[in-house]
Amino acid sequence: MSNLVFVLDTNRHPLNPCTSGVARGLLKAGKAKVFRRFPFIIILNKVVDDTPKPVRLKLDPGSKVTGLALLQNNGQFQHFNS
Image (cartoon, rainbow, N blue to C red; front, side, top):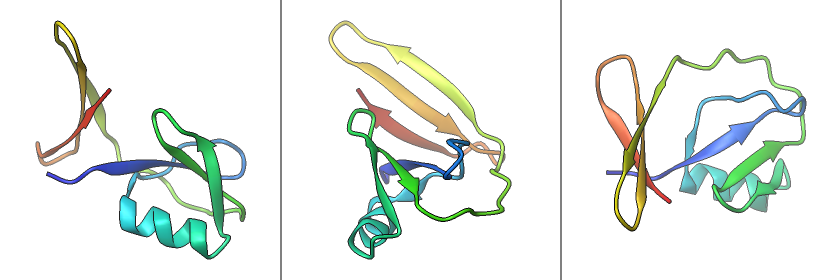
């Protein structure tokens, strides 16, 4: 299970989430900056023409921790804890 980082374009529109390694590379190269720390979101410095893939958000309310899952088209999910 991989953790993903949320990505925004310069106009604050959502893009496809990326892996933490890609996000780290964008931050080190100066192509992005941190928009929010929790949940971790980066914002790109340049305009990007990209249409995000459709995803569904599922919530799992627990007694101590709420789980978040992003479902993609093929039924696979990426799990986030908050």
